[in-house]
Image 1 (cartoon, rainbow, N blue to C red):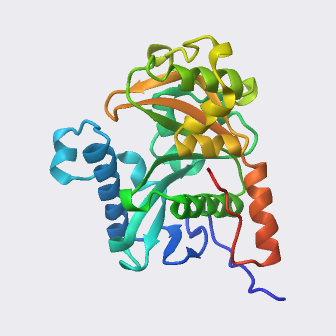
Image 2 (cartoon, one colour):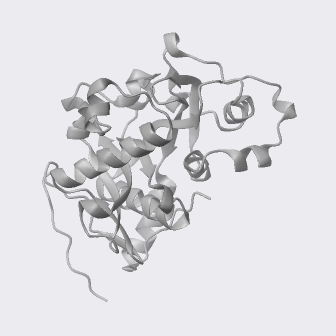
Length: 282
């Protein structure tokens, strides 16, 4: 079987990859102002209206979740084609920021919570993941699989070596999350070479109970699907949690070396299969 030769793009012109489909749903990068606006509107509905984030007056007036990083990021979107192929069909999103983009706005978002010097020293391409959310009616396996497929395609296209970011646990009481935080620290702490550490003024110790009292199998199943997905890809967490009062969450740093992601995607890509690697987070 022969395949069309992939076009070569300059770094600032590379569109990433074509749309990947699964039934009515497709995943691709957002294009144009209307789709970015739809992403920000979805994030507002999920983060502020549903999860109780605290909006400043400008955010509340616009009903949009936005910050300076949006302008330089790539925005992965899941689109329901039964609703529409463009902005009207956006039902899921993930924000992707590469190093060159972060440099244009003074650094990565995660640096507001964590010392990321270990990531910046890493000898390879790095990618920050963040602002992930899915509309309520689409929170099932199909949408999560598509998001992971999109990330895998992006990682493959841009030869990413390490993914990192802040992942959230619900609520701002670390003692209520004692089992989750203690389990993550004792079973998934990153090696020193890539270990992010919460900034001193924001550091919350994750070791909140006797780890011998935790059933690791049960603890894994109760984690949020996104964190569970990272861990099943061989991911790690950083040292220290961070309370994010604005978003009503307790954050942990997540680091994933992408060998497994690229291995799975590369295998399917080279075979020319339309059904590229499904990275099931469940």
